[in-house]
Every structure is written in structure tokens, then in C-alpha cells.
Length: 409
Length: 231
Image (cartoon, rainbow over all chains, first blue to last red; front, top):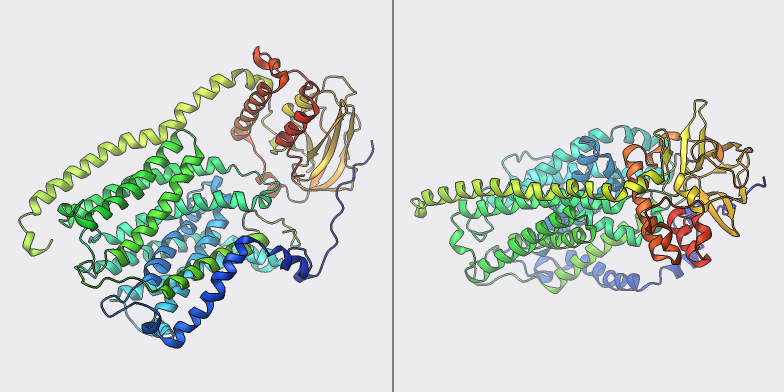
């Protein structure tokens, strides 16, 4: 029998060339960056990053449409509230795999954790932009503010971001080949997951509590004494839906990353769809219960806010729930993915409705974000997407690395 | 509850209780609807796959790679590797097998073997990472019956990390489900081929389906089933 010559290993380049430039020379790498997506992203960043700096130079008054009546705008409503909700996939999938033993979902645990980590980082940068004196943030470490919801939110953000950073450190150190660091972290992954569930539960619900302490400012259809519960349940929906959407995109964009690794994406999507359908169905009724409890039933369908609430509830909660259920029952992953996109949009809509649209709803001058606020938000999202792509193209996120510290990428 | 609508509390409570009861009643139906799909759809393919299940047997102690190669941990710490039943039936009698030599490293998901049959050639991927320690010099001669999971083994590997390699393989019920799904895929694929009449009578697929298909379609089939475009 003759020997079959397998492909000869490629010549090893320098560390930077291998790890950063994906094995290409600098010239080849720069050439590879010339794509329509990158050009649009660069255009957003070229204007957005100086605007971000300008906000600190000129102040909030000059760059935003925030006021004493409306101290929270797009950077809180969208970047913070939505970013945190959509980052919930990290603890949702982490808990499913590490705590409940649903090993099938192991393949999507790392991307979910990475999305969670980047979501939190983007939210924190948005928060820094929004705070009048962001350097005063360090105060939470020295002051005893246990009566304050913001105190809880701030501590949860700090703790959970640290836990996410530690969870993400596993693929990061694997990428660097630093076995001494990632092996112990892998061993305490279960403990980290328990912490992540605890901090997330507290944090997601605390964001809802922030609005409980503002009765009268929020439209009665959105306001409820149970908002902490609504925020937590909808965060679970956001986590599940975001993982569905993200894994669909990842399988298309990063197909080469799945080489040699059998991941039945459709099966996982359908499983997630089942969970999403049930949670959303329950959430729909919880929200109805909240409206009744708040004596706001007569507002349903009345005026702009009554109709807008119905759009959110029927179009972005009940509809994706039905799509999830139908898709899961009939084994149609595409339908589940469509439901996922609608559900993610629904979560964004819900957070923006609560913190912007339906907030100060009875005030004569309603807040509309300035173009700088919109552009900075766009910049943060773009930066998050670029960071995700940069990391996934290099680090073992969509697949686990070989035991050898010098794995390919 | 705020002060001005204190009396409306009673009607609100009635609504709340009614909603809670209504929700629970609807939830039971919704839950059954969501979960029921799986149960209902399972017997259906079983009925369909009854012949397919017989075509492609699978011993309990082998783990499958999606590229239709199998791996079996042996008592001496080495792993035997071979081509699964469906793969054998697809290729049929082999004219020439090109195997890796002892000492060579094989990588999971990368090409390790080449089979030449009827003027066509197909690469097979290795299901495990490791170093080749032996190859099957006693492969049955051309035309002789081959037991895919027995004397048809191709080579043995000392795995670099069996636990990690195994995590990427399919075993147990999942493997049997997967084989049946692949059999259905093949059936559907053959139905579209000029030679589709092969299986329409419900009989077992012939040994060497590849030979019945023209070269263009054979390439398609190889890409789909052996994942050679990834190797």
C-alpha cells in the first residue's frame, strides 16, 4: 500500500503574523480588509470616535438633547438597557450547559459568553458617555449605598462584567497558548456560571427596579410594581433569541470555523425555539397581568401609547412566541430564526419604549435624541460587532481549541 | 394600588384571577402543542425509515464522524478507524485504498485515506487526532464481502486526546438517528438521480451506488456525504 501524503503544514510565520494577521503578511492583511462591510464600518467609526471624545470636551448639554426632565436618553435606553438585555445569552446558555447539564448546547456556550461580555463592555462605554462625571463612578466602591437601586445596578455590572471577563479568559488564554492560566479557569467554570446566574438575575431585575421607583413618569401600561420580574423574564427571552440569531449569522459568516466540528445548528435552534416559545407565552400573560394590576386596562388600544403597547405585545411578544412554537413543533429552523429576529427587535423596542418613548409620556416636550447621540450609539454597536468578528476569527470561540497550545486559527 | 381607584380594586382582582386561570388553561395546550411536535414527528420518520434502518447497521461501541468514518476504542488504548456501512455501500468494491503509514499524524476532520473505485476517487477524513500505529494490510480483496465495522477497519491510531476527539463524534441513539437521517438524505438524493429507480422498489441499496451515478453527480454526493470539501 502506498502512503497517502497529507497536506504539508504551512510554513510558520511570526507570532504577529500568525495570531493577528491570520497568517497573512501585513500587505495581504490590509488588502483583505477592503470589503464593503468594513468600508461602512470605518465610515461610522471615523465620525463616531471623535464625536465620543467631543462629548467629553463639550459636555452633555452641547452634544445631547437630555434635560433635567429627561436625564436618560438613547445611551441609557438603547446602549445600556438593550445591550444588557441582549447580553443575557451568556448566563442563559451557561446555566443550561454547566448547571442543567444540557451538553448539546455546549457548542454555542462560548459565542453566547462572548456576546454577553461584549454587550456589557458596550453598555459600560455607553454609560460612561452618559454620566456627567464618569470618574465619580469609583465612589460606589467606597460608599455604603445599599438603599439605592443604582448602587445595586452598579455593583452587579462590576461583578458580572468581571465574571464574564474570567469566562472569556478561557478562549483568550487558549488562543495565546497559556495553558497555566486557562486550565484552572476551565476547572472553575461551573462556579463562574453560578456567579454569572446570580449577578445576572440581580442585575437584570435591578434595571427594572430603576423604573419601579419612578411611578408616574412611565406610562401606566408599561409601569408595574413587578417590573423587576418583567425585566428578568424578558432578559431570558432576549438571551435565547439573541443566541438563535447570532448562531444563524455565525454559521453563515464564520462557516470555516466549524470545519471538522459537527454542530447540528438546526437542532439547537429548534430546541432554543421551544424554550423561547414557552417563556414568551408566559411573559405575554405576565405583562397583561401587570397592566390589570396597574389599573391600566382602559388604556389598551387608546391613543398613541395604547396602540403602540398593543403593537409591542402582539407583534413583538405574541407573534414571535407563536413562530417559535410553530417552528419548533414542525422542525422548521428557519421559522424559529425569523421569530428570533422579531423577538430581538421586540426586546430593543421594549427597553426603548420604557426608557424613552413611554417615559415622561405626559410631558409637553418629549425627548428626541440628537444626531450625535444616535451616531455615538451606532459607533458603539459597530465597534461591538467588529470586536466580535475580530475575536471569532482568531480565538477558539466557535470551536474548542486543540489541546496543543499551538493550534491553528 | 393608588388611592383614587381604590374601589376598582375588586374588578381588577377578578380580572387578574380570570387571567391567571385562563393563562394556566391555555398554557397546558400551548405546552402540549410545542412539545407535541417532537413526539408526533418521531413515529412518522420511523415508519418511513423502517427499510433504511435495515440498510445501515451500527454496532453500539463505535462513534461516528459526520464524514462517515467510525472510531472504536480498543483495549490497548489505540483507536480503530474505518468507513461506515453507508460509505461502503456508496463506494462499493474498492479498487485501491491509500492509507496513512504508521508514524504519520492524522487530524480529526482532515483527509487521511483515499479510496479509488470504478475510476472515481474519494478522500475520507480521520475521526480522531493522533498518530497512526497500524494499517489494515489484510483488507478483503476486491469484490469480497467486507464487514464495515469488523474486518473492514482501515487503520489504527494512538489518539492524542481521545476524550476531546470523542466529544466531536456521534454515539449511541444520536448516532443511530443520524445514520437514519443520512439514509433518508441518500434516498432523497438518489430519487433525483437518473438512477433513482434503484431504490423506488423499497429494496436495499446496491453495493456501489457510486458506479450507477454519472461522474458529475458522484462528485456532489461525495461532497455531501464524505465532507471531502472540508478535508
